[in-house]
Structure formats: structure tokens, C-alpha cells
Amino acid sequence: MSGQHAETSTGERTFSWFQAGETAEAYVEALVSQGVSCLFLNPGTDTFPVQEAVAKRQALGRPVPRVVLCPFEITALAAAHGYYAATGRPQAVLVHVDVGTQNLGSMLHNAQRGRAAAVVSAGRAPYTTDREVRGARDSYIHWLQEQMDQHGIVRNYTKWDYELRRPDQVGEAVARAFQVAASDPPGPVYLTLPREVLMASPGDVRIYRPERFPPARLGAGDPEALHEVAKLLVRAERPVVLTGSSGRSRAGFEGLLRLAELLALPVVEWRDRTNFPADHPLHQGYNYGNEPLIASADVALILDHDVPYIPTRTDLSPEATVVQVDLDPVKERVPLWTFPVDLPVRADTGRALDVIASYASELLTDADRRRVESRRAELAASHARLRQQWSRAALEQASARPIAPEWLGYCLEQLRRKAPEFVFVLEAVTNAVTIARQVQVAEYGTWFQSGGSGLGWGIGAAVGIKLAQPDRPVVAVVGDGSFLFGAPVATLWTALTSGAPVLVVICNNACYNATKQPLIAAYPEGYSVRLDHFVGIDLEPAPRYDVLATSVGAYGERVEDPAEVLPALERGLARVRDGQSAVLDVILAHP
Image (cartoon, rainbow, N blue to C red; front, side, top):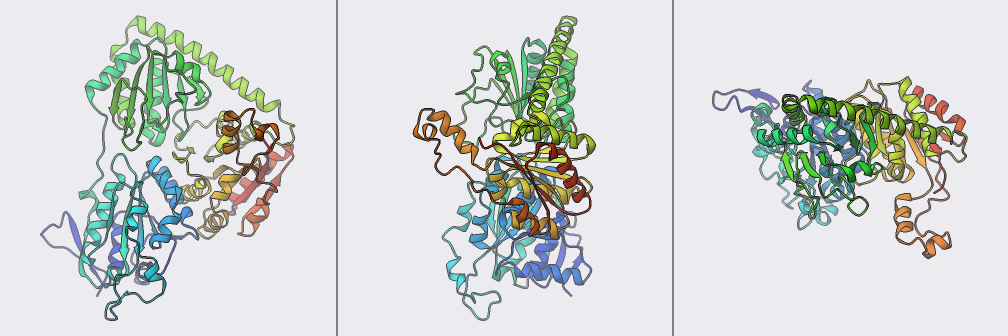
């Protein structure tokens, strides 16, 4: 009978035997063995063997991943990315041949640049027209969907790709996919599954034990280099820390907090994660709004940051010593990356920061401690000034109509204080820094951005995070363009059917402001500015996003009165707590 395990003395520590009626059953068994919780599926004429295998295993009482049906592929990969970001555990995505692969679109870019491990599988058009072979071509589209190189669609963005060529390889291929995806630096991988192979009857298949094929970890890095980093920071007069995603792990969050407090280091974030408590006196704001600290620094410690500053906007002091501690400190997959780094350290920051702090505590002299304490007081005063400045900017616009983004951020902060377990997903684009300045998240794992530039990630990622952390409310703060890119009907439907309600707050300025801003900067006296005629930028008349939400079972509300922003957020949160997604269409000033 298929679906049975057997052990043998040969290789029993490495694999177990699984008797599979079809290869697709062994594929599902391999996912289960890897600890996959969710299979994010957009189906096609090539995925049905897997769907049948899941149904069979459910009927027989065997474990299966939860199948999360996603009516559009970007929802699937964004959700898998969000799930990984929240848990550190790679999930599986299954899409349809070449067309489904193409529909993953910029979410694959986000997974690559955001270092999100995900195992993306896709069908492959059947090979044969042999009537004796199960799964052979039997539809018009099977000729159209075969490409010269289907893997070429994704090869720029994946760490590994492979086509399953033999039924008995499936356990080996899946184990390899997860090992490569999760190894440092993590990222997406791609495995294609031909239909004939999925429907073959392989008999006994090896299912490889994940503990025998663990991902490779970088560890803390070179001890001599870390000792040198500690020495530089202890002796620094004007240090600065620039961090992008060191808070991707709890160890990274706590390690930076320990080091910064020990040496009174100013921390400036590009907030892909909660890297440092926003309410901490050493927190000194966000890139790209506090460049004076960068320009005056004598030591710059850069942590997990792809673009620490913009060279055409900010001058790094020529006397500065630059240290980069990173999973990839020289950005090998970015063709041109010429930021000066005097000491690159390839390491897991979650491990390295603790070692640096230990070295630094041994090196501190009494003179160093006096300098550190003097700097601590200065930074606390600076932090207080920034907070006062940002709060004042919000309160001064509390009654502005249309609604000011500062006021929206301020109200989000009031909501967070009432529900501190909130998780924020941000894709507000040109309003991102404005929102970040107001929302003072201070706990590990409470803030997520994609790490890439592909818009449409936010609402799908929020659903994935909610699936990973069902007891925490999740709010996605997105631009109106980001909302549209995120396939909102498909994504909100997935949230509904998977029981993963989320609160979506749309920063609706009725335009592609990310395009408008550089146009104005490059052509300040151009025709677009002089005539106030911006081609291909305005999203007017704006769609009724609140009405769209109701079509897929979500609560929708249009918010135009600034006095109603916080009450609307509270109503949305109440809906989410009751199990219904909510979409608040907040009407901001048109830039």
C-alpha cells in the first residue's frame, strides 16, 4: 500500500523509505518532512497530481501542509516571504508552468533582495504525446507552454534551480532545495515538476531527513576582525551605526541593543525590520533623513544594509573608517556596488554583535567610559528633540484636510499603544519615513518591509505573517499604488478563505508619487512643473477601495475627516479581532 514508511539499517540516519503510489505523494511527504506549514498554491493543468496527493493523504489521515489557495501568484510568494520573515522557516509555493512563474513577477525580486528563503515549485509542460504515458500532452496549451528555458525566467533571482527528472529523485531534490534556500545568505530557489514525473509510480522513494542536511550558517565571523571592530568603536569620537535588517533575528535585535548601550552608539535605521527600539534615547532617526551623522562620523558601523546612504546626496567623511558586518558585505549579486568599506566582515550579525560587545567591554578604559557617558547625554537630548519635532509636525496638522501623512502616522502610534502586540507591514513608499517617524515600535518582530523594490508585497506579506502568527493583529500600511499592485481582490480573498484577517490602511494620495518626485527633482523648471501637467502619474478618479473590499468579504471604510482617523483605525482593529479583514482608504493630500 502506498504512503508507508520503512526503515533499513543502511542510511537510516540519512533517509527513510516512503512507498509512493505516485511521485506527487512523495513530493508532499518531502514537504512534510521539511516542516512546511503552508503550501501557497496557484493551480494549473500541471499541479493537479499534487492536489490529488494532498486529498488522498487527508483521507488516509496522513499529515499535509496547509494548502493556501492564492488566486494570483504574487499573493502566494508575498505571503510565503512574510511567513519566512516572521518565523525564519521557509515555506513552499506551487505555481503553473511558465505563465505562473512569470506572474510571480517582482515578488521574486523582493525575495532575492530581502533574503527570504522560499521553495518555489512550478509545473513543466508535459514532454510526450505517448498515450501509454500518464500525464502526457492532452491539451492545446501543452505545446504553447513549453519554453526553451523556463528556468531562465527566474535564474537571475534564485540561488538554485533544478528540474525533477526522475521519480525517485523527488525526496533528494526537495531536501536540496530547502537546504540551499535557508543557507546564509538565504533566498528563493526554483524546482520544476514535469507532469509525467509527478504521475509516475516510483515505488520506494528516499525521504531525506532535514537534520542531516541543515542549512549552512556563517556564524560570528573572523574573531580578529571582530576584535578590530570593537577597538575602532571604543576609540571612536563620532561613531554611527547604520542598520537595515539586523533585526531579522532576535539575536540581532538584542545584540545591537547591548552594543549600542555599552558604547552609547547613535543608531540610524533603514527599517526593513525592527532593528532597534524607536523610543530608545540612542535612536537617531531614519535614512535618508539624518545625514549629518553620516557626514561627520569617524567610524561608521554598517549592519545588514544594502544602500547605507546615497552618495549623490550625502558625503561620507574622508577620515571615516567604514566597517560592514553583513551576510554579504560586498554585495556580490549587485553588479556595481562601490561604497567604500575598510573592514568588511562576512557574518551573521546576530552572532557577531554579541562578540563585538564582549571584546569592547574588555577594552574600555576610564577615559573611554567618560567619553561614552558624555556622548550618551548628547544623544538622549538629540533623540528628545527629534521626537518633539516629529510629534509637533503631526499635531500641527491634526485638522488638515486632506489628511496629512504625519497625522495618519500619529494615529497609528496611538492605536499601537492600545494594542502593543500589533505587527506592522509597511509599503507606503514616499510616505514610509514619515510613518516610521511617528510609529514607535520597540519590540523585536513588530515591523516588516520587503527588502526589495517590487511594489504589491505589503498586503500579501501581511496575510503570510498573520498565518504564521495568528494571535497577533497585523496591519499593512500601503500606498494606493502598492495596494493596486498587490492584486487586492485575490489577496483579500485569500485572507478571507484562509482565516487570516488583516487590517489594511491605504495612504491614498491618488498618484504615483514615487515617479513624480524624481521628475520634479530632475526638471524643476520643466513643462510638467510649469503647466502642472504630469503625464502617467495621477490615479484620478481614484478607485473606491472601500467598496472593492466589501466584494471579498472585508470591511471597507473611506476616511476623509482627520478627526475620524483614530476612530476608524479602532473600528478596523475591532473587525480584525472579530475575524474580518478591514480596508481603510485614508484620503491624503495630493502631492
